[in-house]
Length: 242
Image 1 (cartoon, one colour):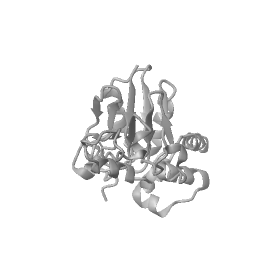
Image 2 (tube, rainbow, N blue to C red; image 1 turned 90 degrees about the vertical axis):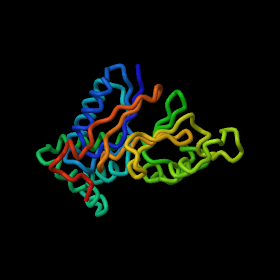
Image 3 (cartoon, rainbow, N blue to C red; image 1 turned 180 degrees about the vertical axis):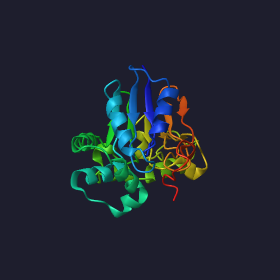
Image 4 (cartoon, one colour; image 1 turned 180 degrees about the horizontal axis):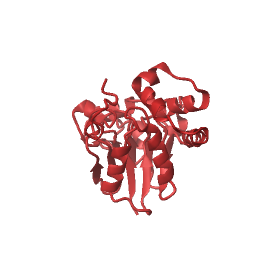
């Protein structure tokens, strides 16, 4: 049995299918998804439906991302957040054309059931963006930090690689977990097309919303599986490249 972690999908169903096929996923594999399933490419509703079906054959954990929270609010209340609409929400709304109210209700239930984070038996943390409490995720007071915080990743990037975990200067936030897996901040921001590691933090968002690829990582072996670049899979669309 493998444990695979998958980065931000952003409506790219074709990329999701490619990645799972590339990894040769079988029923015994456990799948962690780091959030932001929607907003960007044209198949957001179809991604959610695919993930619901995938959860019937595999043990899956679906972490909630900020775009998922926006989409959840729209499905529940009909409210369209202006920022969300400009950053992929329009495409998500359009992707639901043809879906029944019953299907939308099932998707809303799916969003509502998503946890903000997950800690596995090996003390590995899976969270969409990060957290700010030096005492760990259980002591986080601002729930939105789980899907908006970028300071965890920025801190890990700037750390002296020679620093040991036993050092009194080692950040307390990072001491609580053996490894931390995040998305939210595309690695293409740093001109990197594959998952990045800094300290004990792994960033799996390789820019599928924009010009990058969708990535999956085997958390034990660190083997990487990737899709084609999303603009190549959706040549007649811009995604969030606007």
